[in-house]
Image (cartoon, rainbow, N blue to C red):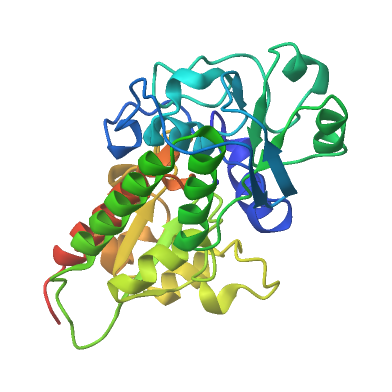
Length: 318
């Protein structure tokens, strides 16, 4: 929701304003997102119609030349078993490694370049300008999977993609695995007398995400209080904190979603002025996250929830 620092905060703020599909900078973890990625006969009948964020889309026959312009939708497609139908993905789609990565941009989609792959279905998360209308004029079905604000949005998009690609069973399986994984992560968490507080870092400039964002909605069930909520005066969901505010809030936990883009770590943040006074730093409760997983809303969010749950379990009950 990153190959460089300049993409981090603007892209994440745009999750709400423009439904930008966030991209990460090279993940290699093996997870449920590649489960079912092998060729599959698929299930479902055609034609089918679903309603995405960009409106209704109809596919007359099982697509065989899919272009995915979002790292998240690429992971979703491979997870449900539609990987063999994907012929091109955008330049930020780095998972799974076998995905046919190209120079196509999901941030600035080029209609002519996309059409050059002769797609019978285009999937994207950010529709700038008249991209969708232009592709539709070329008789190319387009499904817009906007950035999720809740986990139910993710489930819906995965289900829609299953319908559009002929992998309804694969989509249902992916959703079941995600629900089971999240439930397992949430199960058995300690119940401290007071909720643990946390700071979720998006970049070293202290941009963060509040509870009303997708990430915030995933962490709230873990019994956590987000210190950024009271600082979001602009109601964007992605405020920039001051050093003074952060130190005063003194979070119990710190999650770093900028380990790849910005080389953030427990060691580096501990050297920042004033950070040595933070409870999370002193008690060694600073946790690095995978930027890619932290910025996407596909099947691998289970790993994000599990990482946060593990962090909560590591804090002694107060």
